[in-house]
Length: 461
Image (cartoon, rainbow, N blue to C red; front, side):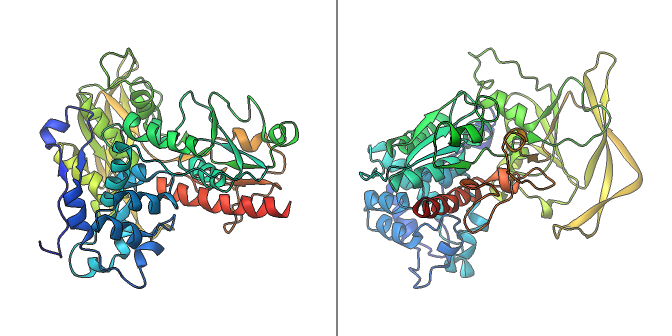
Protein backbone atom coordinates (compact mmCIF):
# COMPACT_ATOMS: atom_id res chain seq x y z
CA UNK A 1 0.00 0.00 0.00
CA UNK A 2 1.25 3.48 -0.91
CA UNK A 3 0.71 5.45 2.31
CA UNK A 4 0.96 8.74 0.40
CA UNK A 5 -2.17 7.99 -1.64
CA UNK A 6 -5.79 7.59 -0.54
CA UNK A 7 -7.50 4.25 -0.92
CA UNK A 8 -9.75 4.98 -3.92
CA UNK A 9 -13.52 4.95 -3.45
CA UNK A 10 -15.73 3.14 -5.93
CA UNK A 11 -18.23 5.26 -7.90
CA UNK A 12 -20.92 4.65 -10.48
CA UNK A 13 -19.71 4.99 -14.06
CA UNK A 14 -20.43 8.58 -15.24
CA UNK A 15 -22.39 7.47 -18.31
CA UNK A 16 -24.58 5.17 -16.20
CA UNK A 17 -25.19 7.54 -13.27
CA UNK A 18 -26.05 10.49 -15.55
CA UNK A 19 -29.32 8.69 -16.29
CA UNK A 20 -30.30 7.64 -12.75
CA UNK A 21 -30.76 9.10 -9.27
CA UNK A 22 -28.83 6.40 -7.42
CA UNK A 23 -25.96 7.47 -5.19
CA UNK A 24 -22.79 8.34 -7.12
CA UNK A 25 -20.23 7.32 -4.49
CA UNK A 26 -20.46 3.68 -3.33
CA UNK A 27 -18.34 4.05 -0.19
CA UNK A 28 -15.63 1.93 1.43
CA UNK A 29 -15.80 -1.73 2.38
CA UNK A 30 -14.61 -2.58 5.90
CA UNK A 31 -11.27 -3.79 4.54
CA UNK A 32 -10.77 -0.60 2.50
CA UNK A 33 -11.73 1.59 5.47
CA UNK A 34 -9.25 -0.20 7.74
CA UNK A 35 -6.50 0.26 5.15
CA UNK A 36 -7.29 3.98 4.77
CA UNK A 37 -7.37 4.38 8.57
CA UNK A 38 -3.80 3.02 8.71
CA UNK A 39 -2.65 6.16 6.87
CA UNK A 40 -3.50 8.35 9.89
CA UNK A 41 -0.34 9.62 11.61
CA UNK A 42 -2.02 9.80 15.05
CA UNK A 43 -0.75 13.33 15.65
CA UNK A 44 -0.28 14.45 19.26
CA UNK A 45 -1.74 17.81 18.26
CA UNK A 46 -4.41 16.81 15.70
CA UNK A 47 -5.13 19.85 13.56
CA UNK A 48 -7.95 17.98 11.81
CA UNK A 49 -10.07 18.32 14.97
CA UNK A 50 -9.62 22.10 14.93
CA UNK A 51 -10.74 22.08 11.29
CA UNK A 52 -14.02 20.32 12.13
CA UNK A 53 -16.89 22.71 12.98
CA UNK A 54 -18.33 20.17 15.45
CA UNK A 55 -14.90 19.15 16.86
CA UNK A 56 -15.21 15.38 16.34
CA UNK A 57 -12.41 13.33 17.93
CA UNK A 58 -11.14 12.36 14.49
CA UNK A 59 -7.96 10.48 15.50
CA UNK A 60 -10.00 8.59 18.11
CA UNK A 61 -12.62 7.25 15.72
CA UNK A 62 -10.05 6.53 12.99
CA UNK A 63 -7.94 4.50 15.44
CA UNK A 64 -11.03 2.38 16.20
CA UNK A 65 -11.62 1.86 12.48
CA UNK A 66 -8.00 0.77 12.00
CA UNK A 67 -8.47 -1.82 14.75
CA UNK A 68 -11.73 -3.03 13.20
CA UNK A 69 -13.75 -1.76 16.18
CA UNK A 70 -16.42 0.01 14.14
CA UNK A 71 -19.01 0.16 16.92
CA UNK A 72 -16.49 1.98 19.11
CA UNK A 73 -15.79 4.36 16.23
CA UNK A 74 -19.51 5.09 15.91
CA UNK A 75 -19.79 5.72 19.65
CA UNK A 76 -16.94 8.25 19.44
CA UNK A 77 -18.47 10.11 16.49
CA UNK A 78 -21.95 10.11 18.11
CA UNK A 79 -20.60 12.03 21.08
CA UNK A 80 -20.08 15.01 18.76
CA UNK A 81 -22.36 14.63 15.74
CA UNK A 82 -26.04 13.74 15.31
CA UNK A 83 -25.71 13.38 11.52
CA UNK A 84 -22.55 11.39 10.68
CA UNK A 85 -23.93 9.68 7.56
CA UNK A 86 -24.99 13.09 6.22
CA UNK A 87 -21.67 14.79 7.04
CA UNK A 88 -19.69 11.93 5.54
CA UNK A 89 -21.44 12.61 2.24
CA UNK A 90 -21.94 16.36 1.88
CA UNK A 91 -19.42 18.18 4.09
CA UNK A 92 -16.58 20.00 2.28
CA UNK A 93 -13.87 18.06 4.10
CA UNK A 94 -11.27 19.22 1.58
CA UNK A 95 -11.47 22.75 3.02
CA UNK A 96 -11.98 21.75 6.66
CA UNK A 97 -10.68 18.68 8.50
CA UNK A 98 -8.80 17.16 5.54
CA UNK A 99 -7.26 20.54 4.71
CA UNK A 100 -5.56 20.44 8.14
CA UNK A 101 -4.41 16.80 7.88
CA UNK A 102 -0.62 16.54 8.31
CA UNK A 103 -0.53 13.53 6.01
CA UNK A 104 -1.64 15.91 3.25
CA UNK A 105 1.65 17.84 3.41
CA UNK A 106 3.34 14.99 1.55
CA UNK A 107 0.69 13.13 -0.38
CA UNK A 108 -3.07 12.84 0.02
CA UNK A 109 -4.79 13.71 3.30
CA UNK A 110 -6.63 10.90 5.07
CA UNK A 111 -10.15 10.41 3.67
CA UNK A 112 -11.80 11.52 6.91
CA UNK A 113 -15.20 12.12 5.34
CA UNK A 114 -15.34 8.75 3.60
CA UNK A 115 -14.33 7.02 6.84
CA UNK A 116 -17.06 8.85 8.76
CA UNK A 117 -19.58 7.78 6.13
CA UNK A 118 -18.40 4.17 6.36
CA UNK A 119 -18.79 4.13 10.15
CA UNK A 120 -22.29 5.63 10.02
CA UNK A 121 -23.42 3.25 7.28
CA UNK A 122 -21.98 0.26 9.15
CA UNK A 123 -23.90 1.29 12.28
CA UNK A 124 -27.15 1.43 10.29
CA UNK A 125 -26.54 -1.97 8.69
CA UNK A 126 -25.83 -3.48 12.11
CA UNK A 127 -28.72 -1.73 13.91
CA UNK A 128 -26.43 0.29 16.19
CA UNK A 129 -27.85 3.58 17.50
CA UNK A 130 -26.59 6.50 19.63
CA UNK A 131 -27.31 6.14 23.32
CA UNK A 132 -30.13 8.27 24.75
CA UNK A 133 -29.76 10.12 28.03
CA UNK A 134 -31.62 8.72 31.04
CA UNK A 135 -31.56 11.96 33.00
CA UNK A 136 -34.16 14.74 32.76
CA UNK A 137 -33.56 18.27 34.02
CA UNK A 138 -37.20 19.38 33.89
CA UNK A 139 -36.75 22.12 31.27
CA UNK A 140 -38.18 22.31 27.76
CA UNK A 141 -36.87 24.01 24.62
CA UNK A 142 -38.54 24.69 21.27
CA UNK A 143 -36.44 24.33 18.11
CA UNK A 144 -37.69 26.00 14.93
CA UNK A 145 -36.65 24.10 11.83
CA UNK A 146 -35.54 20.50 11.40
CA UNK A 147 -32.55 21.16 9.16
CA UNK A 148 -28.95 20.45 10.21
CA UNK A 149 -28.78 23.33 12.72
CA UNK A 150 -32.06 22.41 14.38
CA UNK A 151 -31.37 18.66 14.49
CA UNK A 152 -27.91 19.21 15.96
CA UNK A 153 -29.11 21.64 18.60
CA UNK A 154 -32.02 19.36 19.51
CA UNK A 155 -29.81 16.27 19.72
CA UNK A 156 -27.25 17.94 22.00
CA UNK A 157 -29.97 19.32 24.28
CA UNK A 158 -31.72 15.95 24.49
CA UNK A 159 -28.46 14.27 25.51
CA UNK A 160 -28.26 16.80 28.35
CA UNK A 161 -31.72 15.84 29.60
CA UNK A 162 -33.76 18.68 28.08
CA UNK A 163 -37.28 18.04 26.77
CA UNK A 164 -37.02 19.20 23.12
CA UNK A 165 -39.71 19.78 20.51
CA UNK A 166 -38.81 20.64 16.91
CA UNK A 167 -41.37 22.61 14.88
CA UNK A 168 -41.05 22.05 11.12
CA UNK A 169 -43.00 24.06 8.52
CA UNK A 170 -43.06 21.36 5.83
CA UNK A 171 -44.73 17.96 5.91
CA UNK A 172 -41.42 16.08 6.17
CA UNK A 173 -38.60 16.83 8.62
CA UNK A 174 -35.04 17.36 7.42
CA UNK A 175 -35.01 20.89 6.01
CA UNK A 176 -32.43 21.39 3.29
CA UNK A 177 -31.28 17.78 3.72
CA UNK A 178 -34.65 16.68 2.32
CA UNK A 179 -35.65 19.37 -0.15
CA UNK A 180 -32.33 20.89 -1.20
CA UNK A 181 -29.81 18.09 -1.82
CA UNK A 182 -30.48 15.58 -4.61
CA UNK A 183 -31.01 11.87 -4.04
CA UNK A 184 -27.82 10.93 -5.90
CA UNK A 185 -25.76 12.88 -3.34
CA UNK A 186 -27.81 12.22 -0.23
CA UNK A 187 -30.35 9.35 -0.23
CA UNK A 188 -33.45 10.41 1.67
CA UNK A 189 -34.80 7.14 3.05
CA UNK A 190 -31.56 5.27 3.70
CA UNK A 191 -29.64 8.22 5.13
CA UNK A 192 -31.69 11.31 6.05
CA UNK A 193 -34.77 9.54 7.45
CA UNK A 194 -32.57 7.14 9.39
CA UNK A 195 -30.49 9.91 10.96
CA UNK A 196 -33.63 11.84 11.91
CA UNK A 197 -34.99 8.69 13.55
CA UNK A 198 -31.76 8.50 15.57
CA UNK A 199 -32.34 12.08 16.78
CA UNK A 200 -35.86 11.09 17.80
CA UNK A 201 -34.44 8.09 19.65
CA UNK A 202 -32.60 10.60 21.84
CA UNK A 203 -36.03 11.79 23.02
CA UNK A 204 -36.67 14.65 20.57
CA UNK A 205 -40.26 15.25 19.41
CA UNK A 206 -40.85 16.61 15.89
CA UNK A 207 -44.07 18.36 14.90
CA UNK A 208 -44.49 19.00 11.15
CA UNK A 209 -46.77 21.44 9.30
CA UNK A 210 -46.16 24.15 11.92
CA UNK A 211 -45.25 27.49 10.34
CA UNK A 212 -43.79 29.54 13.17
CA UNK A 213 -44.84 33.12 12.54
CA UNK A 214 -48.23 31.94 11.21
CA UNK A 215 -49.39 28.84 13.07
CA UNK A 216 -47.81 30.13 16.27
CA UNK A 217 -45.29 32.83 17.16
CA UNK A 218 -42.12 32.65 19.25
CA UNK A 219 -43.74 34.89 21.85
CA UNK A 220 -46.64 32.44 22.11
CA UNK A 221 -44.27 29.49 22.43
CA UNK A 222 -42.63 31.17 25.40
CA UNK A 223 -45.58 32.90 27.06
CA UNK A 224 -48.43 30.46 26.37
CA UNK A 225 -46.72 27.10 25.73
CA UNK A 226 -44.15 27.86 28.46
CA UNK A 227 -40.99 26.82 26.65
CA UNK A 228 -37.97 27.89 28.68
CA UNK A 229 -35.93 28.78 25.57
CA UNK A 230 -36.23 28.80 21.78
CA UNK A 231 -33.69 28.02 19.08
CA UNK A 232 -34.26 29.46 15.59
CA UNK A 233 -32.77 27.22 12.92
CA UNK A 234 -35.19 28.02 10.11
CA UNK A 235 -32.52 28.40 7.42
CA UNK A 236 -32.43 30.79 4.47
CA UNK A 237 -35.07 29.75 1.99
CA UNK A 238 -35.83 33.02 0.23
CA UNK A 239 -34.05 32.95 -3.16
CA UNK A 240 -32.32 35.85 -4.84
CA UNK A 241 -32.82 36.84 -8.47
CA UNK A 242 -30.76 39.01 -10.85
CA UNK A 243 -33.44 41.55 -11.73
CA UNK A 244 -32.88 41.13 -15.46
CA UNK A 245 -35.60 41.21 -18.16
CA UNK A 246 -37.46 37.94 -18.70
CA UNK A 247 -37.05 36.49 -15.20
CA UNK A 248 -40.83 36.06 -14.86
CA UNK A 249 -41.14 33.94 -18.01
CA UNK A 250 -42.47 30.40 -18.02
CA UNK A 251 -39.54 28.02 -17.72
CA UNK A 252 -37.55 30.15 -15.26
CA UNK A 253 -36.97 28.49 -11.87
CA UNK A 254 -35.05 29.30 -8.76
CA UNK A 255 -32.81 26.42 -7.73
CA UNK A 256 -34.80 26.12 -4.49
CA UNK A 257 -38.05 25.56 -6.36
CA UNK A 258 -36.47 23.19 -8.87
CA UNK A 259 -34.77 21.01 -6.25
CA UNK A 260 -37.78 21.02 -3.92
CA UNK A 261 -40.05 19.78 -6.71
CA UNK A 262 -37.56 17.08 -7.58
CA UNK A 263 -36.79 15.99 -4.01
CA UNK A 264 -39.89 16.49 -1.85
CA UNK A 265 -42.39 16.02 -4.68
CA UNK A 266 -40.36 13.23 -6.31
CA UNK A 267 -40.35 14.60 -9.84
CA UNK A 268 -37.43 12.28 -10.53
CA UNK A 269 -39.72 9.25 -10.00
CA UNK A 270 -41.81 8.44 -13.13
CA UNK A 271 -44.57 7.03 -10.93
CA UNK A 272 -45.20 10.49 -9.41
CA UNK A 273 -47.28 13.07 -11.27
CA UNK A 274 -45.16 16.09 -10.36
CA UNK A 275 -44.93 18.97 -12.86
CA UNK A 276 -41.38 20.04 -13.57
CA UNK A 277 -40.12 21.54 -16.81
CA UNK A 278 -36.60 20.78 -17.85
CA UNK A 279 -36.67 21.37 -21.58
CA UNK A 280 -34.18 19.97 -24.04
CA UNK A 281 -31.59 22.61 -23.10
CA UNK A 282 -31.23 24.12 -19.63
CA UNK A 283 -29.02 26.96 -18.38
CA UNK A 284 -28.06 27.05 -14.70
CA UNK A 285 -26.84 30.44 -13.49
CA UNK A 286 -24.44 30.26 -10.55
CA UNK A 287 -21.39 28.33 -9.38
CA UNK A 288 -22.09 27.02 -5.87
CA UNK A 289 -22.99 23.55 -4.65
CA UNK A 290 -26.69 24.26 -5.16
CA UNK A 291 -26.01 25.19 -8.78
CA UNK A 292 -24.19 21.88 -9.27
CA UNK A 293 -27.09 20.02 -7.66
CA UNK A 294 -29.63 21.73 -9.93
CA UNK A 295 -27.52 21.17 -13.03
CA UNK A 296 -26.95 17.48 -12.32
CA UNK A 297 -30.64 17.01 -11.51
CA UNK A 298 -31.69 18.61 -14.82
CA UNK A 299 -29.22 16.35 -16.63
CA UNK A 300 -30.81 13.29 -15.06
CA UNK A 301 -34.24 14.53 -16.08
CA UNK A 302 -33.10 14.39 -19.70
CA UNK A 303 -31.71 17.86 -20.48
CA UNK A 304 -28.51 19.11 -22.03
CA UNK A 305 -27.16 21.47 -19.34
CA UNK A 306 -24.90 24.52 -19.42
CA UNK A 307 -23.65 26.15 -16.21
CA UNK A 308 -23.10 29.90 -16.57
CA UNK A 309 -20.71 31.49 -14.06
CA UNK A 310 -19.44 35.07 -14.09
CA UNK A 311 -16.00 34.36 -12.64
CA UNK A 312 -13.29 31.90 -13.73
CA UNK A 313 -13.14 28.23 -12.78
CA UNK A 314 -10.58 29.03 -10.06
CA UNK A 315 -13.22 31.09 -8.21
CA UNK A 316 -15.97 28.46 -8.34
CA UNK A 317 -17.36 28.14 -4.79
CA UNK A 318 -18.71 24.61 -5.37
CA UNK A 319 -16.85 21.60 -3.99
CA UNK A 320 -14.10 20.32 -6.28
CA UNK A 321 -15.65 16.84 -6.13
CA UNK A 322 -19.06 18.11 -7.30
CA UNK A 323 -17.57 20.06 -10.22
CA UNK A 324 -15.50 17.02 -11.19
CA UNK A 325 -18.59 14.80 -11.14
CA UNK A 326 -20.60 17.32 -13.16
CA UNK A 327 -17.94 17.49 -15.85
CA UNK A 328 -17.64 13.69 -15.96
CA UNK A 329 -21.39 13.46 -16.52
CA UNK A 330 -21.27 15.79 -19.52
CA UNK A 331 -22.35 19.17 -18.14
CA UNK A 332 -20.92 22.15 -20.05
CA UNK A 333 -19.43 25.15 -18.21
CA UNK A 334 -19.33 28.71 -19.56
CA UNK A 335 -16.96 30.66 -17.31
CA UNK A 336 -16.48 34.45 -17.30
CA UNK A 337 -20.03 34.76 -18.60
CA UNK A 338 -22.97 36.65 -17.12
CA UNK A 339 -26.65 36.76 -18.21
CA UNK A 340 -28.13 40.14 -19.18
CA UNK A 341 -31.58 39.02 -20.37
CA UNK A 342 -33.77 35.94 -20.61
CA UNK A 343 -35.23 35.74 -24.10
CA UNK A 344 -38.95 34.94 -24.28
CA UNK A 345 -41.11 33.73 -27.18
CA UNK A 346 -44.56 35.07 -28.12
CA UNK A 347 -46.26 32.62 -25.75
CA UNK A 348 -44.27 33.73 -22.70
CA UNK A 349 -41.87 30.77 -22.62
CA UNK A 350 -38.09 30.85 -22.41
CA UNK A 351 -36.38 30.55 -25.79
CA UNK A 352 -32.84 31.59 -24.87
CA UNK A 353 -30.55 33.53 -22.58
CA UNK A 354 -28.49 36.56 -23.59
CA UNK A 355 -25.06 36.78 -21.97
CA UNK A 356 -22.04 39.01 -21.92
CA UNK A 357 -18.39 38.01 -21.56
CA UNK A 358 -16.59 39.05 -18.38
CA UNK A 359 -13.00 39.60 -17.29
CA UNK A 360 -11.56 39.69 -13.78
CA UNK A 361 -10.73 43.05 -12.25
CA UNK A 362 -9.66 44.02 -8.74
CA UNK A 363 -10.68 41.92 -5.69
CA UNK A 364 -14.08 42.73 -4.14
CA UNK A 365 -15.14 42.61 -0.47
CA UNK A 366 -15.06 38.78 -0.50
CA UNK A 367 -11.42 38.79 -1.62
CA UNK A 368 -12.22 37.37 -5.04
CA UNK A 369 -11.40 39.37 -8.17
CA UNK A 370 -14.46 41.28 -9.27
CA UNK A 371 -15.82 40.36 -12.71
CA UNK A 372 -16.13 43.26 -15.15
CA UNK A 373 -18.13 43.26 -18.39
CA UNK A 374 -16.34 43.24 -21.73
CA UNK A 375 -17.78 45.82 -24.11
CA UNK A 376 -19.60 44.59 -27.23
CA UNK A 377 -19.29 40.93 -26.26
CA UNK A 378 -22.95 39.92 -25.92
CA UNK A 379 -24.10 36.60 -27.35
CA UNK A 380 -27.15 34.33 -27.08
CA UNK A 381 -27.47 30.73 -25.92
CA UNK A 382 -30.54 28.81 -27.05
CA UNK A 383 -32.26 27.17 -24.04
CA UNK A 384 -35.77 26.09 -23.04
CA UNK A 385 -35.41 26.62 -19.28
CA UNK A 386 -33.28 28.67 -16.87
CA UNK A 387 -32.48 27.80 -13.26
CA UNK A 388 -31.28 30.69 -11.09
CA UNK A 389 -28.90 29.64 -8.31
CA UNK A 390 -27.68 32.93 -6.85
CA UNK A 391 -27.94 32.31 -3.13
CA UNK A 392 -30.69 32.79 -0.57
CA UNK A 393 -31.64 34.98 2.39
CA UNK A 394 -33.79 34.21 5.46
CA UNK A 395 -37.55 34.51 5.15
CA UNK A 396 -38.62 37.55 7.23
CA UNK A 397 -41.69 35.77 8.62
CA UNK A 398 -40.19 34.90 12.00
CA UNK A 399 -38.31 38.15 12.57
CA UNK A 400 -41.35 40.24 11.62
CA UNK A 401 -43.61 38.41 14.11
CA UNK A 402 -41.20 38.31 17.08
CA UNK A 403 -40.82 41.24 19.46
CA UNK A 404 -37.28 42.44 20.30
CA UNK A 405 -35.63 40.20 17.70
CA UNK A 406 -32.99 42.17 15.79
CA UNK A 407 -31.87 41.43 12.24
CA UNK A 408 -29.24 42.97 9.98
CA UNK A 409 -29.71 44.58 6.57
CA UNK A 410 -29.82 41.11 4.92
CA UNK A 411 -32.66 40.08 7.28
CA UNK A 412 -30.28 37.68 9.05
CA UNK A 413 -30.83 37.31 12.80
CA UNK A 414 -28.02 38.88 14.84
CA UNK A 415 -26.48 36.83 17.65
CA UNK A 416 -23.69 36.67 20.20
CA UNK A 417 -21.28 34.39 18.31
CA UNK A 418 -20.00 32.79 21.50
CA UNK A 419 -23.42 31.64 22.76
CA UNK A 420 -25.88 31.95 19.87
CA UNK A 421 -28.04 34.28 22.00
CA UNK A 422 -30.17 36.76 20.04
CA UNK A 423 -31.29 40.20 21.15
CA UNK A 424 -34.37 38.59 22.73
CA UNK A 425 -33.89 36.98 26.13
CA UNK A 426 -34.14 33.19 25.96
CA UNK A 427 -34.09 33.06 22.17
CA UNK A 428 -31.08 31.65 20.34
CA UNK A 429 -30.33 31.18 16.64
CA UNK A 430 -27.83 29.56 14.31
CA UNK A 431 -27.18 28.33 10.80
CA UNK A 432 -28.31 29.98 7.58
CA UNK A 433 -30.86 32.18 9.38
CA UNK A 434 -27.83 33.95 10.89
CA UNK A 435 -25.16 33.65 8.19
CA UNK A 436 -27.18 33.40 5.00
CA UNK A 437 -26.73 30.31 2.82
CA UNK A 438 -23.74 28.23 3.97
CA UNK A 439 -22.80 24.57 4.41
CA UNK A 440 -24.51 21.77 6.33
CA UNK A 441 -21.57 21.32 8.70
CA UNK A 442 -21.34 25.04 9.52
CA UNK A 443 -25.04 24.99 10.39
CA UNK A 444 -24.40 21.97 12.60
CA UNK A 445 -21.55 23.78 14.32
CA UNK A 446 -23.86 26.74 14.98
CA UNK A 447 -26.51 24.40 16.40
CA UNK A 448 -23.93 22.88 18.74
CA UNK A 449 -22.74 26.32 19.90
CA UNK A 450 -26.34 27.38 20.58
CA UNK A 451 -27.07 24.17 22.52
CA UNK A 452 -24.17 24.96 24.84
CA UNK A 453 -25.42 28.54 25.17
CA UNK A 454 -28.95 27.38 25.94
CA UNK A 455 -27.77 24.97 28.65
CA UNK A 456 -25.79 27.77 30.27
CA UNK A 457 -28.84 30.05 30.04
CA UNK A 458 -31.11 27.40 31.61
CA UNK A 459 -28.68 26.84 34.47
CA UNK A 460 -28.73 30.56 35.27
CA UNK A 461 -32.52 30.77 34.99
